Length: 261
Ligand SMILES: [Zn+2]
Ligand SMILES: [Zn+2]
Image (cartoon, rainbow, N blue to C red; front, side):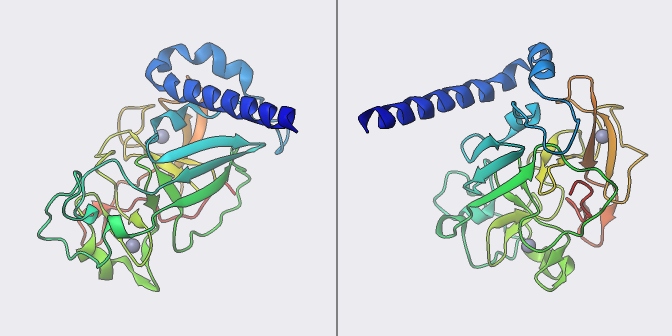
C-alpha cells in the first residue's frame, strides 16, 4: 500500500516537473524545432496519441490555466480570471480600473465563479463538416477567460454592448467573457487570441504568414498557413475577421461555425 502511494506521488511529481519544463519552453521558441517534429505523431488516423502539447499553449496565462494532454485530447482547466485590467475586477483589486462608460453588470469578478474546464481534440477533424456555436463558453482565451460568440442570452449582442469593457468583455449571468476582439492581448495584430472548443486556435486580425490581413479566409475566418507557433509547418487556424461588427466599433471574436469537429 505504501509503495503504491509512493509510486503515485513520484509519478505526480514527474508529471508536474515535465509540465513545468514544457511551459518554460515558451521563451525559447526558436530552439523548439528539433524536438517538436519527432515527438508529435503524424496523422494516420483520428486517434493518434499526441505526446507533446502544441507550442501555442505556452502563450496561455499560466497563473489561470492548467493545460495537459489526455490521450488524443487536450484538457484546459482555468480559473477564468484574466491577467489584464478591467472594471469587472471590482474596486480594491489591483487589476481594477475605472470605466465610467461601461454599464457594468451586477456581478464583479471577486464574487463570481469564473472557472471552466474544456476538453478539445489535440488534432482537429477538418473534414469539411461545420457545427454552429452555442451560448456560453466557445473557447478559452490566452488570458485565461472565456470566449463567447455573437449572441447574448436569447438575443443579439447589440443589446449587451453597453456593458462590454475596454477589451470587449463583460460578465453575463455567468463567467467573465469576450465577445469582441480582446485588445488586451490582440489589437490589430497576429497574436494568439485563444483556442476554441473544436481544438482550432484563434488568432488576431492579421496573419503571421503574410504580416497583414489574410484574404483567403473561409466563412469562419479560417485558413491554412504557417503561424508563429508551427515552426514553418502549415496549420488550419481561425482569425478574428477584419469587419467592424454592428455599432460596437470593434470586431467579433468568433461567430462560427466551427470547422474542426
Ligand atoms: Zn455576454
Ligand atoms: Zn493565418
